[in-house]
Image (tube, rainbow, N blue to C red; front, side):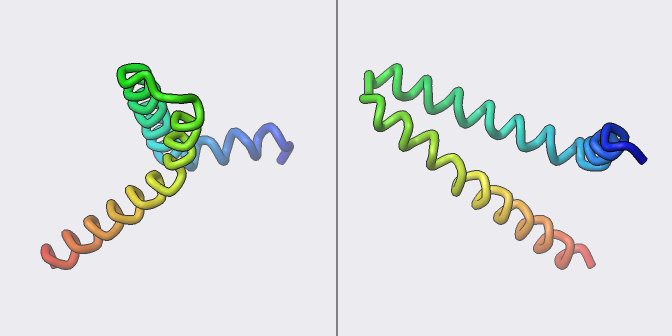
Amino acid sequence: MGWLAKIGNHIYENRDGMVFDMAFALVWVTLVVAFVTIVDGPDWAQYLLLAAGIPAYFGFVYSLELAKEHQKQRGA
């Protein structure tokens, strides 16, 4: 299997997660830029808020997994 086929296979297998990641990133960046523009904040604050998206993403995904697990336990 060639490297291009491996990449295509990886994308096919993980497309839902990749779409979720892209949607979260787009929403986060849009909200941060809109907020900093509205309050006319400094550049460093914008960069700090953009960097805060990394732990925010992992926290959101972790809480989503916990909620799914809790729902699964209640249904079983």
